[in-house]
Length: 151
Image 1: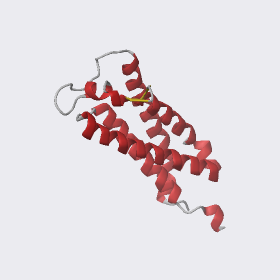
Image 2: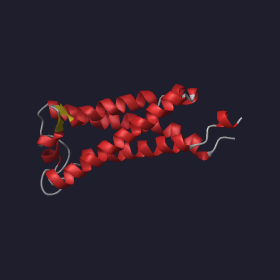
Image 3: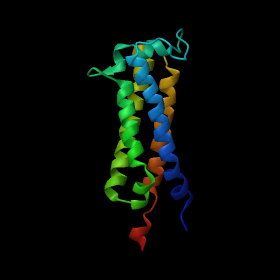
């Protein structure tokens, strides 16, 4: 009988990755449209415009939002149901590595928002929470004992 983790974690990862992809795509569109219509306050500590237009919103000239969209697209492909059913060690390690790289980037970006930019973006925070949820689900599934090796 499958454990609770074995049933919920794989089913949660694809919706989370697709949600992150949607949010990151919106932020990427906002970046390239030079729009200032972000649905977020633009004064005080919560200031999406300040965060998304800061020098730190680019990494080597690439918008952080675009990097997020690429990350979530890759994670969505690794979280497709056929890849979960295949139970490949290589895919499990890639999925875990991706989730770890995502959460490391989130920690870096939150530090940059708080320390350097001194503002928080609500859209970015939503992306960060999705990446954290994805990390937790992937880690929980990864730590689940493999029934094939016990048989």
